[in-house]
Image (tube, rainbow, N blue to C red; front, side):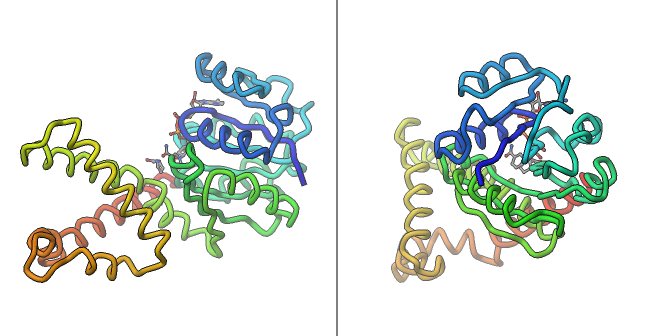
Length: 269
Ligand SMILES: NC(=O)C1=CN([C@@H]2O[C@H](COP(=O)(O)OP(=O)(O)OC[C@H]3O[C@@H](n4cnc5c(N)ncnc54)[C@H](O)[C@@H]3O)[C@@H](O)[C@H]2O)C=CC1
Ligand SMILES: O=C(O)[C@@H]1CCC=N1
């Protein structure tokens, strides 16, 4: 099915996803209404050819198949009641970190089809990672439509337990920030090692880009790819002794993911 969509909140993530849907033709601009109070961001969305509004005035008169909630978790409970007139006819898809389906059911009614989705910012270039979980009220048609929309932004994994969303948030939702920080660190180390800032940036970025692509496209185990770089007693072995000694990086990543997962759970309370 091709459906009508209302996107509530068109900031970083909402806009990144909107661009993907429109570019892929998964939805036509005329079938999208964006509600965004920030004038600059609303105009940016409008330039994509979609209808826009600063507030949900007259929302009850809209016919929507899917209402996508892309506001910050902290404001979601205040924003959502205005959309109750659209439920349960429309399904609701939320990308808000930590906000449980039960919160949607409480505000919109227990008969509302709700899908939680955790995307990430590489969705802006069609290389996102989306984890989704749907309650039992979501029809197969809507699920197929959601899958088409989200696939325009990257890969989609369907979860069988809502609690897994907190783990997805901690791994792939927040994950791009970990990788960007690694690029920053590699770049800083490259400058310290004597390279120009320009060269350092390119080396760090292209290394992460190339390694991620090789890992995805070769089908090899990441550990096997690591071994292929590591000559016995060579330079990589010297570096890995620092990173892997006492599972240093492993422990750090584990601690970071656990902190994000716990924060995701906390946000939902
Ligand atoms: N940025 C990221 O990497 C990711 C963010 N998320 C989730 O996406 C959601 C949005 O995050 P960002 O895009 O980063 O935040 P953002 O602040 O860039 O976007 C939120 C937008 O909501 C708008 N807004 C505020 N009140 C509104 C209202 N009453 N009606 C309609 N729009 C309203 C704001 O003007 C803003 O443009 C959050 O819930 C976050 O947890 C999920 C995955 C990744
Ligand atoms: O930092 C956050 O809370 C959001 C959710 C995942 C990425 N950004």
